[in-house]
Image (tube, rainbow, N blue to C red; front, side, top):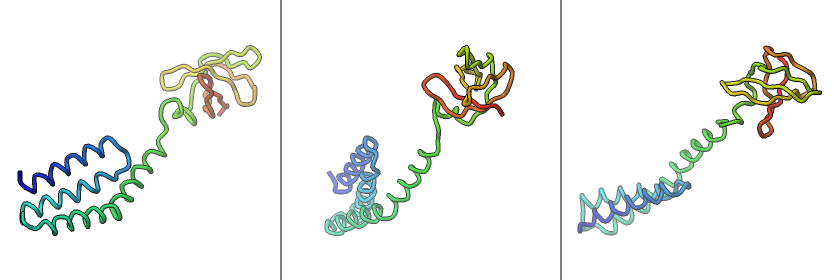
Length: 145
């Protein structure tokens, strides 16, 4: 087995490890191993240079690439509301009178109906548009707009 093949196998294994983890650390070593494999293919007898290239490239990717990627991934994950949390702030149509005394009321939003209550205990007639301000389990709290 050639030296460059060993470096490539190491790079592939590190990519697989990165897929199984979330720290974006193993990929830095995989990039270093890839560059070492390239050097091993060009100069197979330069073991010291291969290890040095592996170490330097891995260190540089840790210092410069990893923080940028982590910042990018965190930025995208924090701003996205999903599932029922995405309802907050949306407009809805009252499909059944909201009556705080009788504990009735439903709103329709995005094709789904939700049990609804008002934030101030007021009653809202069917057909009015409201805004969802919070959610507790299967009940949304709305306000008139």
